[in-house]
Image (cartoon, rainbow, N blue to C red; front, side, top):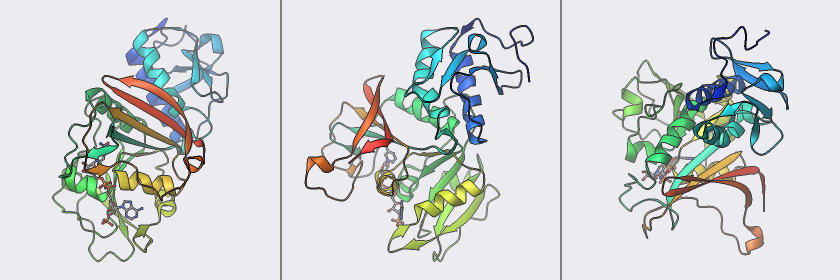
Amino acid sequence: VTYSAATSPKFAATLHEDLAWRLLQGLARSASRGVRFADGAGVVLDEHDGVRCVAPDRGWFVVRADSECGWEPSAALTAAARELLDMYAPLCVGPRSGELVLAHLGQSLDGRLATVTGASRFVTGPEDFRHMHRLRALFDVVLVGTETARIDDPQLTTRLVPGRQPVRVVLDPRARLDHGLRVLSDGCAPTIVVLGTDAHAAAPQAEHVDEVRVTYDGGALDLVETLAVLRARGLRRIFIEGGGITVSRFLEAGLLDRLQIAIAPKIIGSGTPALTLAPIEHMAQAITARCRRFTLGADVLFDCDMRAARE
Ligand SMILES: NC(=O)c1ccc[n+]([C@@H]2O[C@H](COP(=O)([O-])OP(=O)(O)OC[C@H]3O[C@@H](n4cnc5c(N)ncnc54)[C@H](OP(=O)(O)O)[C@@H]3O)[C@@H](O)[C@H]2O)c1
């Protein structure tokens, strides 16, 4: 399809926040379908909000798929549009964008996700919540562990931002979740419950709920198999929203492409830990990640490229 400023109503001399956000969503949808934009391609939106490649000087931005930031401007853009593209473009273009697995945790200065009672509202601030809703909208799946579903009873919707609703996935290897939880009963979005193969109970019989069975051995759900089952359903971009045990297990299994940790200037002093991994003896064994840093209100977000991390 040939696309030009002359034929498109969507051409913008200045890229503002709304257009930048729609472009990012278009790029994320393309990534989910396995489309890769060549390094150096200009990109714009067509009249159906699909992404089109154009000459670099005609694009809203130029894809820099091989660079850390993922893009470079080619049109004039507002500060808000620039912030959005800085944060999210690398998650939508680039070599692994088609099957990206990203986890996010919001923790205190002392590495806690919640108090001893499990209360986690609100460790991080409203900017980080909005960020999480944006992440939901850019991924095919938002996935949480059993305890997060049980304690928080989240809706896992994109209600704070305009955007596509992802499929909700809840890990429940031992089928112990109450069927009255919102994700299992509200019908707001398709929901998949991942049960262990030997779990005695079934997921609730609701139109929006589907169950899949995955190998559960020695207290561990097979996460490679879990991702394979989701990908077989066309769900390739996975956002893991916690909690700490779930993210730690994905990290330990080497399945995270990116790990985002938002740190709030608070000290809880006790309660649910963020990451818990096997003990190490020497600092040389610590995972050293290449990170980008962003300010989200009072919080600082570290966006770590785990594929470039090393022990
Ligand atoms: N601040 C934040 O960003 C944030 C985000 C999310 C949650 N939270 C808070 O964190 C707390 C929950 O986190 P959490 O770390 O305790 O629990 P979690 O990660 O939500 O859930 C852990 C449970 O999920 C199941 N599970 C997950 N991965 C598994 C695997 N690979 N194999 C087997 N089972 C697996 C297990 O269930 P079984 O026990 O049935 O085997 C496990 O006990 C809540 O208080 C919530 O409010 C905070």
